[in-house]
Image 1 (tube, helix red, strand yellow):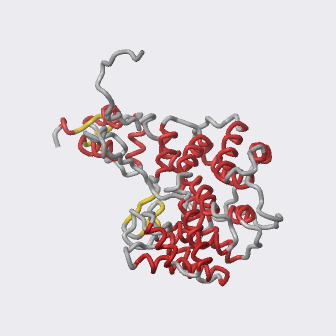
Image 2 (cartoon, one colour):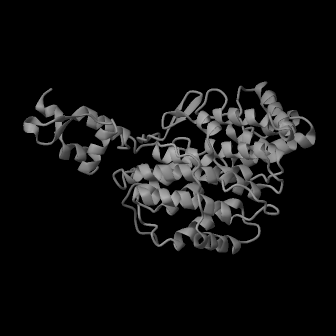
Amino acid sequence: MSDQARLTTREAAERLGVKPETVYAYVSRGQLSSERAPGGRGSTFDAKEVDALARRSGRREPGTGAPGGDFTFRTGITLIDKDRYYFRGVDAVELATTYGFEEVAEWVWTGELTHGPRFTAPQPFLDAARLAVGALPVHSSTMDRLRGAAVAVSAADPLRFDLDPTAVLGCGRMLIPTLVGALPTAGERHRGEGRTAWQLWQRLTPQLPDEQSIRLLDTALALLIDHDLAASTLAARVAASARAHPYAVVSAGLGALEGPLHGAASGLAHRTLTEVLERGSAAPVVADHLRSGRRVPGLGHRLYPGEDPRARALFALLEAIPQASDALAAARDVVDTTARHTALHANVDLALAVMSVAFGMPAEAGETVFAVARTAGWIAHALEEYAERPLRMRPSGYYTGPRPPRPLPA
């Protein structure tokens, strides 16, 4: 290979838009190969390989400033492949059905399995979050409360701008239980283990849980930790690219998650199942959706040609819970009825809706589970983005307005 095809460490760093030490980090991760320079001074890198890595890491391709442009970002967190998805190379469904939410979160964050981790909310931070949530209007939604709690905890943490990985991990382990603990309980408090699923359950329904129901919620949390660059995760990464602190990253994610086409979709599915149970059949409910031109909630996912693997895993657990039989039958009725017109499979929103309907949870319960779980994913993406070149996500606008110069308006 000619010398012209090799780059010095400084040249490789310039092309990648990172510091020289980050180049060596890529080598240690197996993302770049290196050779010793002649005379043994420093390393050299294949220019084509460096350019390919730059493209994968989010450098804009020619023409992406125009409509239809796209970004591709390097990530080692989640891979979605056909009808399965993986957390750091391990089947995510197997992880979620074998380990608890906290253990899977630690795996997603660090690539190491920690047995029995416990996330703890420091009392001063919990007090600040509850004070902020308590000041909101009575009609405030759970997402309003979660966003308010995140801002309050941020203000209470004078070290929030410490972006060292150890500090960010500590923030994640503290923030998740604080957000959950700031939510009002749905009934009388009951004693339970210190796991997130136990604490969240009593914020979703007054019904007492058993091991099966807690396992269902715990699995749902673990399954929903991450799903590649969904809209909320992209928003979180943009914030992290600007070196926003982890609380702000989570706040950005929460803002995007509230859209009806993202985290709030399970609430629409909840209302659909409730109506099916009230009317005794899915046929008139599906017909109403089709007549009004609305898509049937809880069906179809653009990333999976078949059934959403997260839904499949949750349905398997729901089948073993007698209390969920009616809601589960209603969901299957919706799928079968819709299949007469178009082949759409159940997605995770429908599975969350079955859980919320079966256990007397409010329609927004699925969105709450989504938000708590995805907080762990946003922290993972923040850790990745903090290691990248700052402000790398700066697309160019494709201007379509009147051509200048125009006269000053009167």
